[in-house]
Length: 146
Image (cartoon, rainbow, N blue to C red; front, side, top):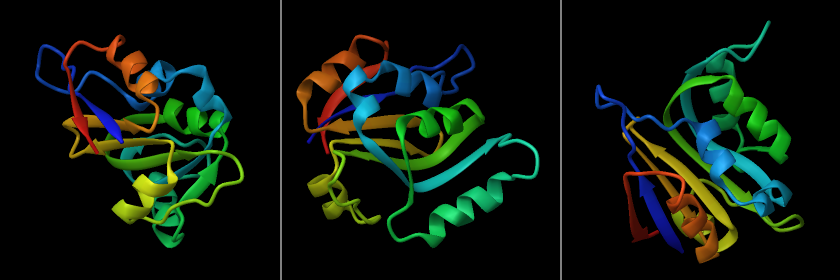
């Protein structure tokens, strides 16, 4: 998989790209994928009666992550203040979801979105056009392999 690291930062040196920005930078084909959050640590407001710790524990308790459609993923992104660590995968409808194992993630996913220690986003994709589309939207990027 080809990948892009995104480290756009604000004047204070903090990552200036949030999950919502990243999702909106993906090509429209991403809306047709099925998504799973395999790992997630963040701060945010999920709404009345919901808390982030329970959400994170729900993800950890599932061997294939928390699965959802595009609109649900965007809804989660809208409620997040800061992502600390994350691994989110998009698969073609009907395919098997990967577990939180690198070889499964690369073998089964069309798109992989990762945040590493609040410092850099990594997006990997089978289709190089996905990466080229993202590259045009951000300033501080570098191409790599995943």
